[in-house]
Amino acid sequence: MLAAQGISLAGNAITMIVVPIYVLQETRSVLATGVAGVFVTVPVILGGALGGVLVDRLGFRTSAIIADIASGLTVLLIPILATTVGLPFWALLSLVFFSGLLDTPGTTAKSALLPDLAEGALLRLARANGAQSAISRSATMIGASVAALSLVWLGALNSLLLDAATFAASALVLWICLPRSKRVASAQPTRPSELKPGYWQDFSVGARFLVASPLLRGIVLLVVVTNCIDSAGLIVLFPVYARTVTPDGALLAGMVAFFAGGALTGSSLFGWFGHQLPRRGTLVLSFLLAGAPPYLAMAAGVDAPVLLAVFALAGLAAGSINPLLSTILYERVPREMRARVLGGMTTGVAVGMPIGSLLGGVLVSQTGLVPTLIATGVAYAAITLTPLIGRSWVDLEARNLSDELLPTVSTTMPNT
Image 1 (cartoon, rainbow, N blue to C red):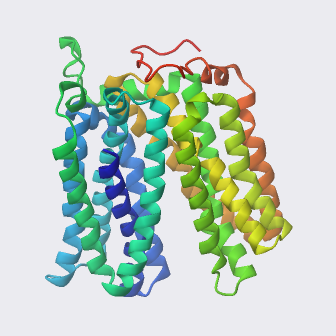
Image 2: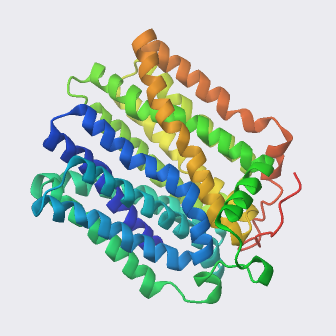
Image 3: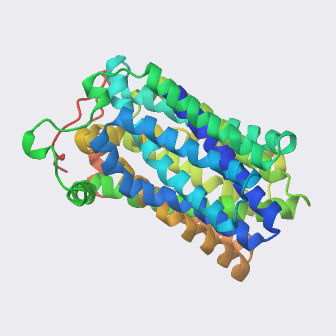
């Protein structure tokens, strides 16, 4: 499952880089490129919200395979149409949109499979989540590198053939290697009265579960705000700063690479001993070190080697965040609604990203880069300290069952 997920995510990274480049080459329009970027990201929001119910109904394994095949065929149509009958801009946007819309439930299905497979392998859930996070970060780095090389050697259209091939390979690995046991293959509840509820009833049940849990609400709100800031940093603040330091902005590649390398190391380390760490303290410290220091270091104008070291340490701290939060979610969400809750959370935390990039541009243009960096760093630090207050966050430690291989997922909401 991890191999299939890594292959698929590497292909996604190729598409995210290649599609805007192809649009810019064909239209010579920055606005059109921005519109294409919207059509790449918006399906993540819709697919996460609406696709989770379908995944719970079809089963995790089946949904993951179908999603990979459907997404691969959609991506494959882009170069086929472009080289045969032609590919109008609206058709390209439609294919990009549907590819992302179909792929997001597949990603949710793979994530929902993880607790069952970890249990079957007698593997600690924290270690499995650490491995999944490391694979995800590695795949993004590899996919971006492959995209850069393929754009030079193959061109934009032929590069999309690689993405289609990754979806096919992912589906094949899932079909051959994943066990076909009833527990892995099907997510359906067993009680006859629950076999065929309506789609929107299923959707509302998952949404109510998410809203009713104070801890899950707190996690979503925290990640929404930090994603807003991260989006502003990656899309606006980091590139603007890099251009002020180096004329060609080459420093940006180093900043991203050092952060990604640190995050990969952090994810791997969490997989080994993360289950032994106190959850609340680890979450706060990881967010605090991963968020504010890069912004404050840029505002202070430190030398490039020092700045890259700060980014590497920030990435090292960030590597623990995703596997830790995933472990908490898997413990608290009932299996029969796992996909719809995970999909709903994906939608919730992604909604703020376009807002963050917009606010980042407005603040830089109105107040200047350095004041914006200082304000962003201070705000990030303040926000990441919120888990230290409030009774709902105490429940982080309530299920830290480090002596067990895998906690049994409860079928009722925890009392918080």
